[in-house]
Length: 573
Image: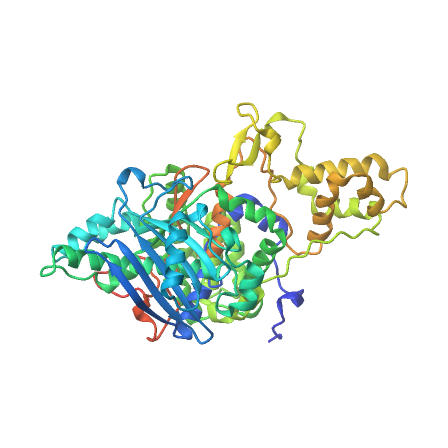
């Protein structure tokens, strides 16, 4: 067997073509896999046996007040501070423009004394209007599910468990509406966080931990309020049901610009994912055990998709089609398991017979079969982003680089009005991304830099205007006279060094679907259950099926992918 190589030296692996991988509709069909950030986080929490204890639990009978959880890791102590208040139904909103929430929280360094608690009490409930400090790593807020929270309380206070049919329709009892980190509102920025707080030095670990703790608090809150309403009759949530309850999340356009602003990071995440798949194809072959695991996971994934409840017709079509196709694939595997020589045969069969959604589902399942074989790649998820111009590059070399790596961008005709109909801008009130239509809306002068394709085209056209008459001109001379192109030149040169480069899409097109960007990023978080509310925002469920805080210290099997309904109190992990 050939020797495994570091990510940067995997030149002999059967990596997929960027032309295939980086098309936006395919990126919008990605599923979570073992190196998704939630999974990475919980492997660490469970293996290091983090201690999570409530040190302050000042809640009234209805669950209003404040709570502090102290988190002790092998490296440090943190505090998770929660403020819970009464909120009228009329003020409960998914939208980022909301100004009041059922709960507001922060994850911060160290233990909490009364002076610190008072400072946080004055600022955390204000969210964007408040200010915290660099000892705070995450700021967030969440609302009760109007469909599930009161229902669960009523059941428990009357001495019975909630109906799984009703729980399954939503999957959570609290839903986050924003999770802020990386220096916003005075918090620790990413460079400081990854150097100082090693427990959260992987991408979005602190944010994912905050969501996990909101889930934990929501479960404790349900038991607390039920006991307060009926001390004699109340029962606690069954552990199997608790594991099936995740934390809801509402994600909108605010997530999309991140993928465009950090192309090196996104290219690296994609490369790690593709390396995982290619490594399995290269080094592993089907045998009885792996085929058995594959078949079990396919059945689990099909059931998971079949159980997803959404009112979105398009998502239902995607889910139903993926279920039908993955079941057909299962039949094919069973019919060919004696002759299946390598996993490339499975990949090719899927590519030739099923839609993109099913292809990526099968790829994700394959990584689950060999999860332990790819876990070392977790260390490759971080990258130092450095976008540098190469001023001495010849202009004709830059032109060739565009023709090689950005051929997809040159195919768009930006003289057509439909190709530039959409524009992205930030709202004045919340500074959150929004979409406008040039033919209907004003504000094009406030457009965000979201269309790499158009800017590459502009750069290419200006190069063509002068390149033929002077082959010795350098990028330095060209950029000096065209300062408006400097950022895109720097980007073209930098991304030319990456394997997977840019997301291949015109984000100004009249028919652009931002939800593909949202789902792409959410898949790296570890989200696989979606309820789109429009093409601009989606509800989703995080940590469904994940172990509970009370499971820390028990044997941990990282098998909570594709969560399915428990059979009464059956454990999911």
